[in-house]
Length: 262
Ligand code: MF3
Ligand code: CO
Image (cartoon, rainbow, N blue to C red):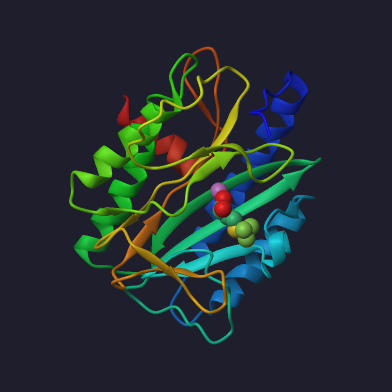
């Protein structure tokens, strides 16, 4: 499938899908506490998504059984919510969700700590987030896709972290996964030239230890091969004629960003 350029009408719908998903992340992130099951998190998330008149993008996608991927500690992505998995103080929890608004998808992920977490976990989460921002410095018309991949991989790799290679970001629009694939590490091909109207889900997955991952027997849950901690940060991004527009940034992230530039 060719990489699609969204029309002004489609961009408006993607923006709304992004705004709604940002609110879901903002509110769901605040609900995490010890004693809660990962299924509780999914149910709350699904309720929020539906309360905004959206459908959860992930539910039944290729058989995935839930609305929110809840991945704890060594789980990298696609953790299946479950009644028996109970959050504990010190856990790190990656929440990945998508919504469909009038036929258009948004996709975003955040990793949160449950109460106090270790310093190394905190740094891993912050640097995973920062790797996304290093990447989107090249999310500009005229840049090539590999510039984003390289910036993410070099930044995260500079701390000795394992940059996951077996999973990628992706184009997004009327489908959850569209072309192009967006790896998070240096490529030997330049990839496509970016153009205004492209919408991309950029999603570094970074491990404290090895980059290697394995799939669990449920065929979904991806864990680090050495069981080290993993963090995930994802946004849906619109390529414009100037600065990239991050469609899924939460209000508190926007505030923090404004404070940082003042
Ligand atoms: N953000 C993930 C991805 O882009 C979420 C997909 S979960 C699935 O691959 F269940 F929908 F596959
Ligand atoms: Co995604």
